[in-house]
Amino acid sequence: MNDNGISKTTISEATSRNWKRLHSNGSGRLMSRANKQLSTKTIVPVEYFSNKDNIAGIQRFVEYCKKQNYSAEEVIYSVGIRLLKDAGIYEKPHVQKVLSTLSFLSFLSSLSFLSLQSLPSDEHDLLGLLYQCFLIEGEKNRKGSYYTPFEVAQNMTKNLDFSKGQTFFDPCCGSGAFILSLEGASPNQIFGCDNDPVAVMIAKINLLLKFKTEVFEPQIILCDYLKKHFKLKFDYIISNPPWGAVVFDERNSPIPTKESFSFFFEKAFHQLADDGTIKFLLPESVLNVKCHRDFRKFLLENTEIKSITKYPGVFSGVQTKYIDIESKRTRRALSRLDIIIANNYSSSWDNECVIHKVKKSCFYLTKNLNFNLLSDDDLEKVRKIISKGKYTLKDSIWALGVITGDNKNKVKSRQGRGMEPIYTGKDIEAYTLKRPTKFIKYERSDFQQVAKDEIYRADEKLVYKFISKNLVFAYDDSKSLFLNSANILIPRIPGMSIKTVLAFLNSEMFRFLYKSLFGEIKILKGNLMELPFPEITPEMDEKLTKLVAKVLKGNKNAVKEIDNQINKLFS
Image (cartoon, rainbow, N blue to C red; front, side):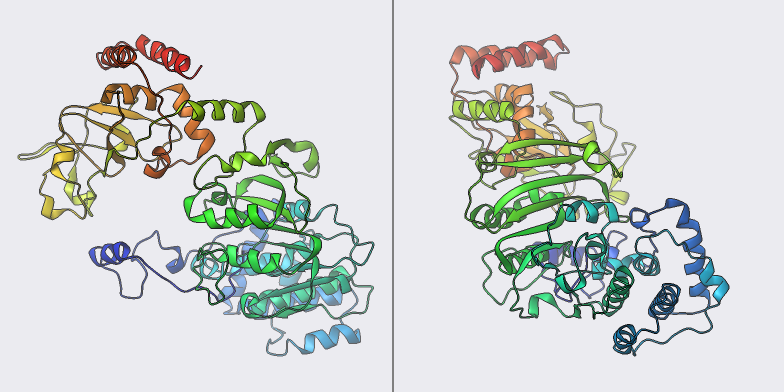
């Protein structure tokens, strides 16, 4: 990823209130370790190394340069010149012409030849790697400078045909990972831009080194892509755009979201030539998170999605997994697309992947147009379950657990005078609660956010884990309190007791359905409200209620019978 100077911060009223409670420093950034934009920690981009044996040597070199107070720009420029000299092209007129445009950088004659000799020769992008190692976490986060591993770039650009003069463009090229991975292209077919002058310098030198026998000037420009007007159309646009930046749109984009990568994609899509291909590396969350619905809608309505590839790793310092989505600018309408699951990176990439096709109709099963990657069999099951539904939880009562604003001081591990148990998400099991291990003095005015007492103290309520791979609901008739890692539901489904609703929510059927439709590790109210409950007879309601009562008394065998009964209801 690579930021293009387009990030502005907007916050909701709720967030503003929370900042005041948490003592914001007034700069619009939370004063906590979670705010990576303030971090001064250095993160080694392990995934960007071609040879992991080089990590220690690169770290020593970077630390040496920092102790000498050399700037990243000076070091990288000096190493770049050394690489051009070693390649025997430094004195060539076209190279000197390119270097003259980088005159704002100074050559470090004091950077000893011996220290340069310690640098490895088997890295695909030594200059980009050095730049990544110089940047601290906060700067990487602000710039979006998380460069694409070579194996990923290579996979995303394989099989491109340049035999008929086709052109390639990377609107967020960074140091040129995608450009370096191209095969069969000449330099006059390659274009790129970035707003980071150091990255542009690296990309230009990398191109000169890649095509060292040719005379040319790299077509890499320094600019903010979203503000630059391009007349050219391109056959291939492949990129790893910035993630997470907030953008104010002045162009009335068809994608109303303020997420930066969607603006890059939308603009790049309109720069495609007829039948052109666009492929972006994106966070995996684009597949199902609600805030990316408009992006998915744009893809479905304007592009022909060809494939989605899921990669196994994450960027160093970032926990989000990533995918790539390949689309075409074409009038053809394909009903299926390839889903490629990459288990690891290797030279035998194609042999390491699992490929299956999914029907695009999978993407229309939910209101948020989640990209559900279902097999034909699972799709048929999901449709069958949905067809049996008559009721939903939309008219039910929902609430969050207590948000204290200061768990460290307000939540205790021992019960003192005037304190009562408060359950957490970890205390919730299917149907039942574990023994409480946390206690609190319940004074509403002391807490950051609380629900109504009548909900906490309801005669019966259901509680569920907020962070979970599966639906996990428990029954509570003790009028107990819960922290916000647990959410509360008082269901209202015609013809069903609260225990019967609990049976459905904990059933294998609903767990399968939720995972198939939403695939998130957060159990969200909006998603739960889409689950389809069938109409049942009073006799079935009574039977399921009694079975749940048995489970609550410790009869675990009743769980299997509950699943059997619910499976029969859905045929």
